[in-house]
Image 1: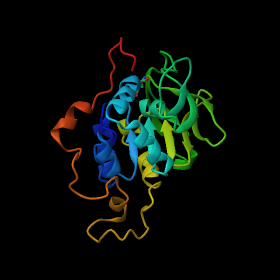
Image 2 (image 1 turned 30 degrees about the horizontal axis):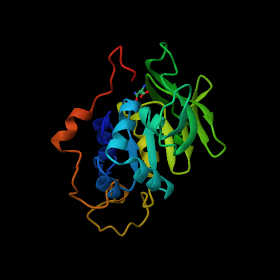
Image 3 (image 1 turned 90 degrees about the horizontal axis):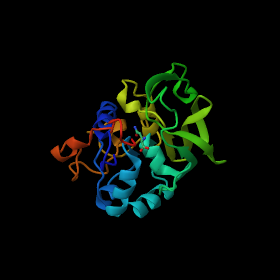
Image 4 (image 1 turned 120 degrees about the vertical axis):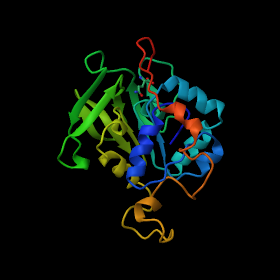
Length: 234
Ligand code: GLN
């Protein structure tokens, strides 16, 4: 979990329920210790500034280029995008899409909408949208896995996925489980990681137990906030 800002603890809850071992990533060393990264919802301009300040921008780009699974939810998808419609906003550029921030306007500024997501099965997925972006342009290598109002809201380009909505704020774990299956040692495969941990744990976000930055640490407790104040550009 990128834990610079945003709704980190909600993702942690779901990942733990699935048997993964999420770690907080705040430094380059933290980043080296994980096998996959989720960038949560929050405020994209803030996080992009913090990524630069913590020297994480280039290391992150190179990990993603090397195939590290990456998932951006809401703000995280903005951070991942190639560019942002109508704004000169810096991004990582690891997902070949143009996003539009706060795209759905007031109607679904904050709403739960059932989404058809065929890769997750036939049951609709509860899409929680909070001042969400949509995908305005998707490059040729980008699969569109769900849409709302004719705009992609779940996309995947190889090891990089982005969702406009917040699965971590629901009880539906299917999207996190889908993401964890992108890890090289997926459930059901021999991991060789020792018999004390089950296959999904072996597929978790850590390369070793007891590493610094465990998300249980108190200094991450301030990060469970999505800015919602009326004036904020969240
Ligand atoms: N509107 C926010 C942004 O542009 C994203 C909202 C969210 O992550 N819930 O950064």
